Length: 395
Ligand SMILES: *Cc1c(COP(=O)(O)O)cnc(C)c1O
Image 1: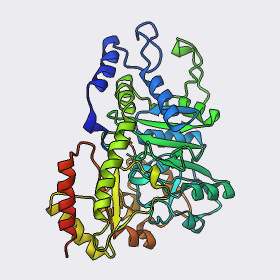
Image 2: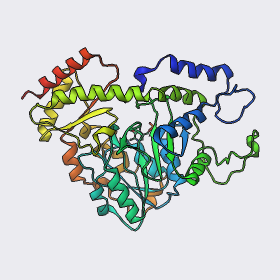
Image 3: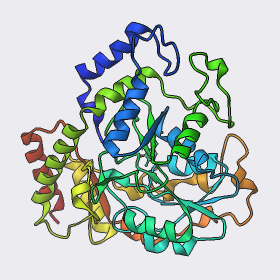
Protein backbone atom coordinates (compact mmCIF):
# COMPACT_ATOMS: atom_id res chain seq x y z
CA UNK A 1 0.00 0.00 0.00
CA UNK A 2 2.94 2.27 -0.59
CA UNK A 3 2.18 5.75 -1.99
CA UNK A 4 5.13 7.00 0.06
CA UNK A 5 7.49 5.17 -2.29
CA UNK A 6 6.76 7.56 -5.13
CA UNK A 7 6.70 10.90 -3.33
CA UNK A 8 8.31 13.35 -5.76
CA UNK A 9 8.26 16.70 -7.52
CA UNK A 10 4.51 16.50 -8.20
CA UNK A 11 3.76 16.43 -4.46
CA UNK A 12 6.33 19.16 -3.79
CA UNK A 13 4.73 21.41 -6.42
CA UNK A 14 1.22 21.04 -5.00
CA UNK A 15 2.50 21.75 -1.49
CA UNK A 16 4.50 24.75 -2.75
CA UNK A 17 1.26 26.24 -4.18
CA UNK A 18 -0.18 26.19 -0.67
CA UNK A 19 2.96 27.43 1.07
CA UNK A 20 3.27 30.35 -1.34
CA UNK A 21 -0.14 31.64 -0.39
CA UNK A 22 0.16 30.78 3.29
CA UNK A 23 -3.48 29.70 3.32
CA UNK A 24 -3.45 26.33 5.04
CA UNK A 25 -7.17 26.32 5.80
CA UNK A 26 -9.55 24.69 3.35
CA UNK A 27 -12.33 27.21 3.84
CA UNK A 28 -12.47 30.95 3.20
CA UNK A 29 -9.50 33.31 2.68
CA UNK A 30 -10.66 33.73 -0.93
CA UNK A 31 -8.60 36.87 -1.47
CA UNK A 32 -5.32 35.39 -0.27
CA UNK A 33 -5.44 31.87 -1.65
CA UNK A 34 -4.63 32.68 -5.26
CA UNK A 35 -7.26 30.32 -6.58
CA UNK A 36 -5.90 27.25 -4.77
CA UNK A 37 -8.53 24.98 -3.28
CA UNK A 38 -6.62 21.73 -2.86
CA UNK A 39 -9.19 19.97 -0.68
CA UNK A 40 -12.02 20.78 -3.09
CA UNK A 41 -9.95 19.64 -6.09
CA UNK A 42 -9.01 16.42 -4.30
CA UNK A 43 -12.66 15.78 -3.43
CA UNK A 44 -13.72 16.30 -7.02
CA UNK A 45 -11.07 13.90 -8.27
CA UNK A 46 -11.90 11.30 -5.64
CA UNK A 47 -15.54 11.47 -6.70
CA UNK A 48 -14.57 11.10 -10.38
CA UNK A 49 -12.21 8.18 -9.79
CA UNK A 50 -14.76 6.24 -7.77
CA UNK A 51 -17.80 7.29 -9.79
CA UNK A 52 -19.44 8.87 -6.75
CA UNK A 53 -21.62 11.95 -6.84
CA UNK A 54 -20.10 13.38 -3.65
CA UNK A 55 -16.94 13.12 -1.63
CA UNK A 56 -15.69 14.77 1.51
CA UNK A 57 -12.19 14.76 2.95
CA UNK A 58 -11.36 14.38 6.63
CA UNK A 59 -8.25 14.53 8.77
CA UNK A 60 -7.85 10.72 8.75
CA UNK A 61 -9.52 7.50 7.67
CA UNK A 62 -10.68 7.04 11.25
CA UNK A 63 -12.23 10.52 11.19
CA UNK A 64 -13.89 9.59 7.89
CA UNK A 65 -15.44 6.50 9.52
CA UNK A 66 -16.59 8.51 12.54
CA UNK A 67 -18.07 11.17 10.28
CA UNK A 68 -19.83 8.65 8.04
CA UNK A 69 -21.29 6.83 11.07
CA UNK A 70 -22.62 10.12 12.43
CA UNK A 71 -24.02 11.15 9.05
CA UNK A 72 -25.77 7.79 8.73
CA UNK A 73 -27.41 8.41 12.09
CA UNK A 74 -25.66 5.50 13.80
CA UNK A 75 -25.22 6.09 17.51
CA UNK A 76 -26.06 5.17 21.08
CA UNK A 77 -27.12 1.58 21.52
CA UNK A 78 -27.02 0.63 17.83
CA UNK A 79 -25.21 -2.56 16.93
CA UNK A 80 -22.83 -2.51 13.99
CA UNK A 81 -21.52 -5.73 12.47
CA UNK A 82 -17.77 -5.64 11.78
CA UNK A 83 -15.08 -8.21 10.95
CA UNK A 84 -12.45 -9.45 13.43
CA UNK A 85 -9.72 -9.00 10.80
CA UNK A 86 -9.32 -5.27 10.25
CA UNK A 87 -7.34 -2.36 11.62
CA UNK A 88 -8.49 -1.31 15.12
CA UNK A 89 -9.88 1.96 13.69
CA UNK A 90 -13.01 0.19 12.44
CA UNK A 91 -14.29 -0.77 15.88
CA UNK A 92 -12.83 2.36 17.49
CA UNK A 93 -15.05 4.46 15.21
CA UNK A 94 -18.13 2.40 16.13
CA UNK A 95 -17.40 2.73 19.85
CA UNK A 96 -16.70 6.44 19.52
CA UNK A 97 -20.11 6.81 17.89
CA UNK A 98 -21.60 5.35 21.08
CA UNK A 99 -22.54 2.20 19.17
CA UNK A 100 -21.67 -1.43 19.79
CA UNK A 101 -19.34 -3.39 17.50
CA UNK A 102 -20.52 -6.95 16.94
CA UNK A 103 -18.07 -9.30 15.31
CA UNK A 104 -19.01 -11.79 12.60
CA UNK A 105 -16.93 -14.46 10.88
CA UNK A 106 -14.76 -13.86 7.84
CA UNK A 107 -14.28 -16.23 4.91
CA UNK A 108 -11.46 -16.92 2.47
CA UNK A 109 -11.87 -13.43 1.02
CA UNK A 110 -10.32 -12.40 4.39
CA UNK A 111 -13.39 -10.16 4.74
CA UNK A 112 -16.84 -10.51 6.31
CA UNK A 113 -18.67 -13.67 5.26
CA UNK A 114 -22.16 -12.69 4.02
CA UNK A 115 -23.44 -16.12 5.09
CA UNK A 116 -22.49 -15.45 8.72
CA UNK A 117 -24.20 -12.10 9.20
CA UNK A 118 -27.58 -13.57 10.05
CA UNK A 119 -26.04 -15.42 13.01
CA UNK A 120 -25.21 -12.16 14.82
CA UNK A 121 -28.26 -10.15 13.77
CA UNK A 122 -30.40 -8.76 16.60
CA UNK A 123 -33.28 -6.26 16.70
CA UNK A 124 -30.66 -3.60 17.54
CA UNK A 125 -28.51 -4.22 14.46
CA UNK A 126 -28.40 -0.98 12.51
CA UNK A 127 -25.49 -1.31 10.10
CA UNK A 128 -22.83 -3.55 8.60
CA UNK A 129 -19.27 -2.36 7.97
CA UNK A 130 -17.43 -4.76 5.69
CA UNK A 131 -13.72 -4.00 5.49
CA UNK A 132 -12.09 -4.59 2.12
CA UNK A 133 -8.81 -5.83 3.56
CA UNK A 134 -5.39 -5.73 1.96
CA UNK A 135 -6.46 -4.06 -1.26
CA UNK A 136 -9.24 -6.39 -2.35
CA UNK A 137 -12.94 -6.98 -2.07
CA UNK A 138 -15.32 -8.73 0.25
CA UNK A 139 -18.25 -10.60 -1.32
CA UNK A 140 -19.78 -7.16 -1.45
CA UNK A 141 -22.68 -7.94 -3.79
CA UNK A 142 -23.97 -10.57 -1.36
CA UNK A 143 -23.34 -8.37 1.68
CA UNK A 144 -25.29 -5.58 0.03
CA UNK A 145 -28.15 -7.96 -0.79
CA UNK A 146 -28.28 -9.02 2.88
CA UNK A 147 -28.34 -5.40 4.08
CA UNK A 148 -31.08 -4.50 1.60
CA UNK A 149 -33.17 -7.48 2.64
CA UNK A 150 -32.82 -6.70 6.36
CA UNK A 151 -33.10 -2.91 6.08
CA UNK A 152 -29.57 -2.34 7.39
CA UNK A 153 -27.22 0.50 6.52
CA UNK A 154 -24.18 -0.60 4.53
CA UNK A 155 -21.06 1.44 5.20
CA UNK A 156 -17.83 0.25 3.55
CA UNK A 157 -14.43 0.56 5.16
CA UNK A 158 -12.39 0.74 1.96
CA UNK A 159 -9.48 2.43 3.77
CA UNK A 160 -7.01 -0.10 2.35
CA UNK A 161 -8.60 -0.42 -1.07
CA UNK A 162 -8.62 2.74 -3.11
CA UNK A 163 -8.58 1.84 -6.80
CA UNK A 164 -10.10 -1.59 -6.20
CA UNK A 165 -13.46 -2.55 -7.66
CA UNK A 166 -16.01 -5.35 -7.90
CA UNK A 167 -17.54 -6.02 -11.32
CA UNK A 168 -16.33 -2.65 -12.53
CA UNK A 169 -17.81 -0.66 -9.64
CA UNK A 170 -15.42 1.02 -7.18
CA UNK A 171 -15.24 -0.39 -3.66
CA UNK A 172 -16.83 2.13 -1.34
CA UNK A 173 -19.78 2.76 -3.69
CA UNK A 174 -21.97 -0.21 -2.78
CA UNK A 175 -23.52 1.18 0.40
CA UNK A 176 -24.78 4.47 1.74
CA UNK A 177 -21.18 5.67 2.14
CA UNK A 178 -17.62 4.41 1.78
CA UNK A 179 -14.46 5.49 3.57
CA UNK A 180 -10.81 5.72 2.54
CA UNK A 181 -7.62 6.39 4.43
CA UNK A 182 -4.69 8.34 3.08
CA UNK A 183 -2.42 7.79 6.07
CA UNK A 184 1.33 7.36 5.83
CA UNK A 185 1.30 3.72 4.64
CA UNK A 186 -1.75 3.58 2.39
CA UNK A 187 -1.90 3.29 -1.41
CA UNK A 188 -2.43 7.05 -1.66
CA UNK A 189 -0.90 9.02 1.16
CA UNK A 190 -1.19 12.63 2.21
CA UNK A 191 0.51 12.16 5.57
CA UNK A 192 -2.76 12.14 7.45
CA UNK A 193 -6.09 12.19 5.69
CA UNK A 194 -9.23 10.30 4.84
CA UNK A 195 -12.20 10.56 2.53
CA UNK A 196 -15.88 9.66 2.41
CA UNK A 197 -17.77 8.99 -0.80
CA UNK A 198 -21.53 8.79 -1.21
CA UNK A 199 -24.24 9.19 -3.81
CA UNK A 200 -26.60 10.71 -1.27
CA UNK A 201 -26.80 14.49 -1.16
CA UNK A 202 -28.23 14.27 2.35
CA UNK A 203 -25.38 12.10 3.67
CA UNK A 204 -22.82 14.32 1.97
CA UNK A 205 -24.26 17.46 3.56
CA UNK A 206 -24.23 15.83 6.98
CA UNK A 207 -20.59 14.72 6.52
CA UNK A 208 -19.59 18.19 5.33
CA UNK A 209 -21.26 19.70 8.39
CA UNK A 210 -20.24 17.13 11.01
CA UNK A 211 -16.53 17.30 10.17
CA UNK A 212 -16.52 21.09 10.56
CA UNK A 213 -18.35 21.84 13.84
CA UNK A 214 -21.73 21.65 12.12
CA UNK A 215 -21.08 24.56 9.75
CA UNK A 216 -23.53 24.53 6.85
CA UNK A 217 -21.03 26.43 4.65
CA UNK A 218 -23.82 28.58 3.29
CA UNK A 219 -22.85 31.88 4.91
CA UNK A 220 -20.54 33.03 2.12
CA UNK A 221 -17.06 34.42 2.73
CA UNK A 222 -17.81 35.14 6.39
CA UNK A 223 -17.64 31.79 8.22
CA UNK A 224 -19.25 33.47 11.18
CA UNK A 225 -22.40 33.84 9.08
CA UNK A 226 -22.76 30.06 8.63
CA UNK A 227 -25.51 28.31 10.52
CA UNK A 228 -24.92 25.09 12.41
CA UNK A 229 -27.76 22.71 11.68
CA UNK A 230 -26.12 19.84 13.62
CA UNK A 231 -23.63 19.31 16.42
CA UNK A 232 -20.33 18.33 14.86
CA UNK A 233 -16.65 18.27 15.66
CA UNK A 234 -13.39 19.11 13.92
CA UNK A 235 -12.22 16.41 11.53
CA UNK A 236 -11.09 18.86 8.85
CA UNK A 237 -8.21 18.16 6.50
CA UNK A 238 -5.63 20.90 5.96
CA UNK A 239 -4.73 22.28 2.54
CA UNK A 240 -1.17 21.01 2.98
CA UNK A 241 -2.31 17.43 3.42
CA UNK A 242 -4.87 17.73 0.65
CA UNK A 243 -2.18 19.08 -1.71
CA UNK A 244 -0.04 15.97 -1.21
CA UNK A 245 -3.04 13.72 -1.75
CA UNK A 246 -4.01 15.53 -4.92
CA UNK A 247 -0.61 14.85 -6.48
CA UNK A 248 -0.72 11.25 -5.29
CA UNK A 249 -4.17 10.64 -6.73
CA UNK A 250 -2.86 11.56 -10.20
CA UNK A 251 -0.51 8.58 -9.82
CA UNK A 252 -3.16 6.04 -8.92
CA UNK A 253 -3.28 4.34 -12.33
CA UNK A 254 0.49 4.01 -12.35
CA UNK A 255 0.42 2.59 -8.81
CA UNK A 256 -2.25 0.04 -9.69
CA UNK A 257 -0.51 -1.08 -12.88
CA UNK A 258 2.81 -1.52 -11.13
CA UNK A 259 1.32 -3.36 -8.17
CA UNK A 260 -0.68 -5.67 -10.43
CA UNK A 261 2.35 -6.51 -12.57
CA UNK A 262 4.56 -7.13 -9.54
CA UNK A 263 1.91 -9.22 -7.83
CA UNK A 264 1.21 -11.32 -10.93
CA UNK A 265 4.91 -12.06 -11.40
CA UNK A 266 5.14 -13.43 -7.88
CA UNK A 267 1.80 -15.20 -7.85
CA UNK A 268 2.59 -16.95 -11.16
CA UNK A 269 5.94 -18.08 -9.80
CA UNK A 270 4.24 -19.55 -6.73
CA UNK A 271 1.69 -21.59 -8.67
CA UNK A 272 3.63 -24.83 -8.50
CA UNK A 273 4.82 -24.57 -4.91
CA UNK A 274 3.69 -27.37 -2.63
CA UNK A 275 0.70 -26.76 -0.36
CA UNK A 276 -0.13 -23.21 -1.37
CA UNK A 277 -3.62 -21.85 -2.15
CA UNK A 278 -4.58 -18.23 -2.64
CA UNK A 279 -7.02 -15.80 -1.09
CA UNK A 280 -10.41 -15.98 -2.80
CA UNK A 281 -10.99 -12.87 -4.91
CA UNK A 282 -14.64 -12.50 -6.01
CA UNK A 283 -13.38 -10.36 -8.92
CA UNK A 284 -9.63 -10.79 -9.57
CA UNK A 285 -9.64 -7.91 -12.08
CA UNK A 286 -10.75 -5.49 -9.38
CA UNK A 287 -7.89 -6.33 -7.00
CA UNK A 288 -5.72 -3.28 -6.31
CA UNK A 289 -2.90 -5.76 -5.64
CA UNK A 290 -1.38 -4.14 -2.58
CA UNK A 291 -0.89 -7.58 -1.03
CA UNK A 292 -0.56 -11.18 -2.11
CA UNK A 293 -2.30 -13.32 0.51
CA UNK A 294 -2.08 -17.09 0.55
CA UNK A 295 -2.97 -20.08 2.68
CA UNK A 296 -1.00 -23.08 3.91
CA UNK A 297 -2.77 -26.31 4.84
CA UNK A 298 -2.08 -26.04 8.59
CA UNK A 299 -1.13 -23.49 11.23
CA UNK A 300 2.15 -25.32 11.82
CA UNK A 301 3.10 -25.15 8.16
CA UNK A 302 2.06 -21.50 7.91
CA UNK A 303 4.22 -20.59 10.90
CA UNK A 304 7.12 -22.48 9.40
CA UNK A 305 6.83 -20.76 6.01
CA UNK A 306 6.39 -17.33 7.64
CA UNK A 307 9.53 -17.90 9.73
CA UNK A 308 11.43 -19.05 6.65
CA UNK A 309 10.30 -16.00 4.66
CA UNK A 310 11.59 -13.70 7.39
CA UNK A 311 14.87 -15.61 7.52
CA UNK A 312 15.28 -15.55 3.74
CA UNK A 313 14.78 -11.81 3.39
CA UNK A 314 11.08 -11.69 2.42
CA UNK A 315 9.32 -10.95 5.73
CA UNK A 316 5.55 -11.18 5.34
CA UNK A 317 2.82 -10.56 7.91
CA UNK A 318 1.39 -13.60 9.70
CA UNK A 319 -1.76 -11.76 10.72
CA UNK A 320 -2.92 -14.28 13.30
CA UNK A 321 -0.21 -13.05 15.68
CA UNK A 322 -0.58 -9.37 14.75
CA UNK A 323 -1.23 -6.84 17.53
CA UNK A 324 -3.28 -4.42 15.47
CA UNK A 325 -5.23 -6.31 12.85
CA UNK A 326 -6.72 -9.40 14.47
CA UNK A 327 -9.09 -9.64 17.44
CA UNK A 328 -6.97 -12.15 19.38
CA UNK A 329 -4.66 -9.37 20.60
CA UNK A 330 -7.27 -6.70 21.24
CA UNK A 331 -7.14 -6.88 25.05
CA UNK A 332 -8.06 -3.20 25.32
CA UNK A 333 -11.34 -3.97 23.59
CA UNK A 334 -11.93 -7.08 25.70
CA UNK A 335 -11.54 -4.98 28.84
CA UNK A 336 -13.29 -1.93 27.37
CA UNK A 337 -10.39 0.25 28.40
CA UNK A 338 -10.94 3.84 27.37
CA UNK A 339 -9.63 7.16 28.55
CA UNK A 340 -13.21 8.33 29.07
CA UNK A 341 -16.23 6.30 30.11
CA UNK A 342 -17.66 4.55 27.10
CA UNK A 343 -21.27 4.23 26.09
CA UNK A 344 -20.70 0.52 25.47
CA UNK A 345 -19.94 0.03 29.17
CA UNK A 346 -23.53 1.00 29.90
CA UNK A 347 -25.10 -1.23 27.27
CA UNK A 348 -27.20 -4.25 28.16
CA UNK A 349 -26.51 -7.50 26.37
CA UNK A 350 -23.05 -6.40 25.35
CA UNK A 351 -21.24 -9.02 23.27
CA UNK A 352 -18.91 -11.03 25.50
CA UNK A 353 -15.75 -9.48 24.10
CA UNK A 354 -13.53 -11.29 26.61
CA UNK A 355 -14.64 -14.69 25.43
CA UNK A 356 -15.20 -14.04 21.75
CA UNK A 357 -14.71 -17.17 19.71
CA UNK A 358 -14.64 -16.78 15.98
CA UNK A 359 -13.59 -20.28 15.10
CA UNK A 360 -14.00 -20.07 11.34
CA UNK A 361 -12.00 -16.84 11.24
CA UNK A 362 -9.31 -18.39 13.44
CA UNK A 363 -9.11 -21.44 11.21
CA UNK A 364 -8.50 -19.21 8.19
CA UNK A 365 -6.17 -16.67 9.79
CA UNK A 366 -3.96 -19.37 11.35
CA UNK A 367 -3.15 -20.52 7.83
CA UNK A 368 -2.79 -17.07 6.22
CA UNK A 369 0.35 -15.22 5.17
CA UNK A 370 0.25 -11.89 3.30
CA UNK A 371 3.05 -10.37 1.36
CA UNK A 372 3.10 -6.65 0.72
CA UNK A 373 3.66 -5.72 -2.93
CA UNK A 374 6.03 -2.79 -3.37
CA UNK A 375 6.15 -0.28 -6.23
CA UNK A 376 9.88 0.20 -6.22
CA UNK A 377 10.81 -3.43 -6.90
CA UNK A 378 13.08 -3.88 -9.90
CA UNK A 379 12.99 -7.08 -11.97
CA UNK A 380 16.05 -8.15 -9.99
CA UNK A 381 14.23 -7.56 -6.67
CA UNK A 382 11.31 -9.63 -7.91
CA UNK A 383 13.58 -12.47 -9.04
CA UNK A 384 15.33 -12.43 -5.66
CA UNK A 385 12.02 -12.47 -3.87
CA UNK A 386 10.79 -15.42 -5.91
CA UNK A 387 13.97 -17.28 -4.98
CA UNK A 388 13.42 -16.44 -1.31
CA UNK A 389 9.82 -17.64 -1.48
CA UNK A 390 10.72 -20.87 -3.26
CA UNK A 391 13.40 -21.57 -0.67
CA UNK A 392 10.99 -20.79 2.17
CA UNK A 393 8.50 -23.39 1.01
CA UNK A 394 11.08 -26.21 1.12
CA UNK A 395 10.17 -28.66 3.84
C1 LIG B 1 -5.76 2.67 7.93
C2 LIG B 1 -7.10 2.12 8.22
C3 LIG B 1 -8.10 2.87 8.87
C4 LIG B 1 -7.85 4.21 9.50
O1 LIG B 1 -7.22 5.13 8.77
P1 LIG B 1 -6.30 6.27 9.44
O2 LIG B 1 -6.19 7.23 8.29
O3 LIG B 1 -4.99 5.66 9.82
O4 LIG B 1 -7.04 6.85 10.58
C5 LIG B 1 -9.36 2.31 9.02
N1 LIG B 1 -9.64 1.07 8.58
C6 LIG B 1 -8.71 0.31 7.99
C7 LIG B 1 -9.07 -1.05 7.50
C8 LIG B 1 -7.40 0.79 7.80
O5 LIG B 1 -6.48 0.02 7.24
